[in-house]
Image 1: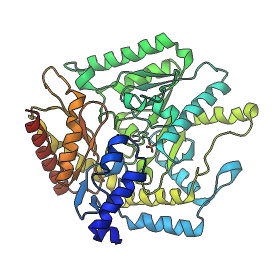
Image 2: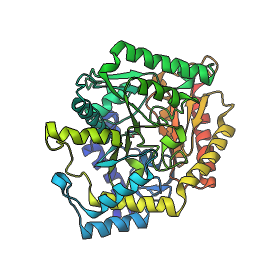
Image 3: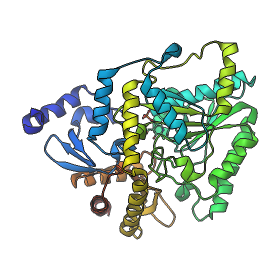
Length: 464
Ligand code: PLP
């Protein structure tokens, strides 16, 4: 253990170093520079994190929906160490290959929720979704359809922060000040029942969502649209589970208009919904699949684009016209990342963690219902598998959102953190998310829900 953990003077020094020098992502820059971080984490194991002042927290978010097998897993650390000693790096350009990425790609193809042909490795969910957009453009150029390039995404969808991925993201906070989204990205309605489908049956709500998509396609022209990207269950946009029949109906629209489907499995992939992939839980049949986060349980930054044979055959044919495929990263097919992924997948399988995520999810949803179903501030409780959210509203019946200036969800997150619970306030309206490591126990889930209930009540009392 370092001195910083044992010595409170060093703990405040750490916080000051961070305040002065770290440029934090998704952070109010001015207030961070003024006030610094409320806590500085130093170590973690399982679902527990510990800060520089010796306080303990249950991480009910698995970091950013990613540390699926939990912190401090020796098996992954050892696999990464061994790989770094054996072959610390090997690029994948110009047909250069190494063993672990080949083994991992084979395993991913075997596991894929629908038949897939090839795996392109990257470093993050954002760059992988960027790659997917380029694949769609290349695909349609090779097919002699150079106008078929627009990408449809959904309001509230989250796909990352690169120029392309931030544009596909349907959250205004990622566009403001950045001149995004670029004009060839179009957004359709989110399947968010509270705000878009209140009082409608599933069938009526699906019809409304399909109609919005059909109108968008008619306005733009199907011959200008290359693909649609969707998370099986939206994460950062609010943990939004679509109504029954939604994906089947959307898929038939896309098929009719020759529009590819990209499944963004960055959160849902590798067990979060209680099945290996979100596509299985939701009945999606994508042409391209993006994975990251749970691929290595965040022990190493690694992402992958899985490509169906239908797309792959066209990309191969493109070689005649464009030469060698002109895209790739220094760290594509990183052997240490591949070793981390193989070790994480081994843990998922050996410990039956996907099944466990489903069971723990049922417990989480039962407890959220029991604690919040009648709460006057809670407008909706959502979730599927081991991912959930509660949405806080000013009026449950209308329904009516809180004034964003009240910062209701961030205040609850901070009150929960004071009780040793890490949750997350999502950027669109006042939702609080839960997405713990799969190794969380039922007793820990109970503590999370109790702590958050106390935090909600504390903020509710302040709002009176
Ligand atoms: N796609 C989804 C569904 C995500 O939730 C995220 C990140 O939260 C991303 C893409 C972007 O991944 P990254 O932050 O690794 O770039």
